[in-house]
Length: 118
Image 1: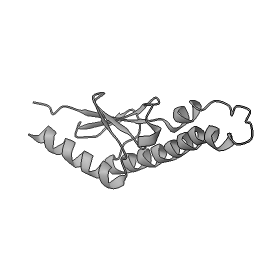
Image 2: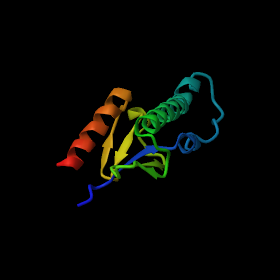
Image 3: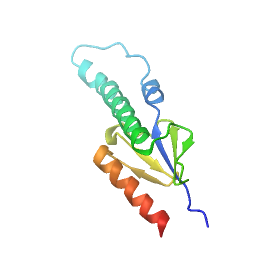
């Protein structure tokens, strides 16, 4: 019996940046409020890129590839609409995990590996 593959998706940093659009003209006193979503999207894009780099290094694969043991496939995803929760990881198109720093990513990999071996 072959263990099921866990598809781990993270937002593509370039697609996250595309959701911003151009800065609208600002009136005095409103500039900071209008820039907040842009800053949030930029932070989310940076953190998504860091999460992607960590997963690629940890799993030894790139986007669109599957680990040699067949347990993990790493895929790019479009914007998840969760910049405030960045970095976000989607597991098997069902489970969204928020604030995934390297320690949490390592824990998720360990959890999914253990589930696959049961």
